[in-house]
Image (cartoon, rainbow, N blue to C red; front, side, top):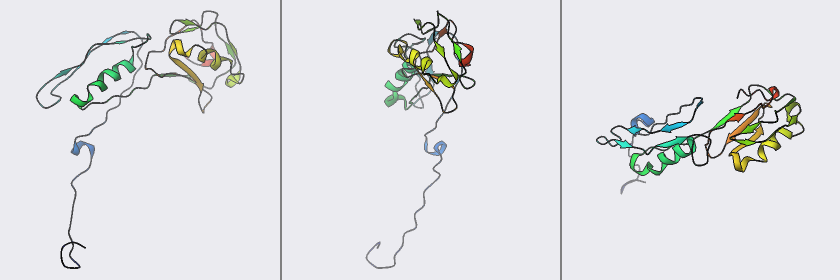
Length: 174
């Protein structure tokens, strides 16, 4: 019941709720980064008047660098700028894993893994196990996705650099 008498009603309406109308927007971008370097950018008129310049961030395969570090830089200023960032750094095989062998000098992010013989679908688990045995050092974790493709993921947002030969059966162009 509204008011002192029964059967009183109130008509209420709400304006547009699209993110573009209420001031919240989401942007996503993606791309292949093939070299290391520094990134620095400025939000122009972030509050309607001022510009905000973020600190330089190194994009590479080293600890404390990469898209994870860039997202951290953006997020530590989110209360001021209103901008938040997330990241996904991964490399996925172009087809299901087939039997193959890595080279003796096979390495990820500068850490040598060496020769690994793996089977179709990495059924013996050799490739995933070998990569994951050094994940704390490389920052790269391996898995086989639902389609049987090798998936390399950087949880920290560092780059993923493959040296040597991962073997043709992984279907990853390094």
